[in-house]
Image (cartoon, rainbow over the protein chains, first blue to last red):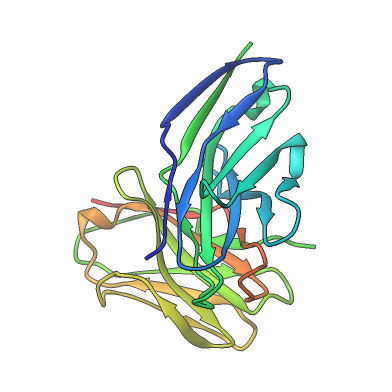
Length: 115
Length: 113
């Protein structure tokens, strides 16, 4: 079975400080991992993905994420937070082995960047 | 390149009615997936269509159904609506391979009264 855990419902960070949004996953075999962001009354916007290769992946709007196989984690990071980064963030996984295309999502983490 | 288009954006229906939601994927994308988003259950996968065939299905009752047309546009139908069906329904478009990202529409907000 596949699953994603986002242990923090809410993360608050001051503008200009680094931010981290945590994600751990469970999947049989290798994972495809994704981060999405959702603004109020909008759909999900793709931020970045890990497929294979370099464990540090860079994405849109200055976000990056680090894949850690031993800890089964894929934490989202940004060196300097902006107020406009305030939104709901979702981590998602697909299992390579199953070949299925659907995503399993975490419960989401609400990021608030304080001016 | 146009994004994923979902219509309508908002819908209010009465219990027992049925509803049809529409999704037009990004040009060239053959896979369309549907997700239900609620505050209590989060984002849950409903089904995926690829080249007019249902390729994968989530754990939802048979009242939820879908189809895909030859131009890759997809519709989702919910019959005999229940209050618990109130949710944001999101459509995701992709090339259909597991390594590729899905692009989401803005969703249809369904309210059942």
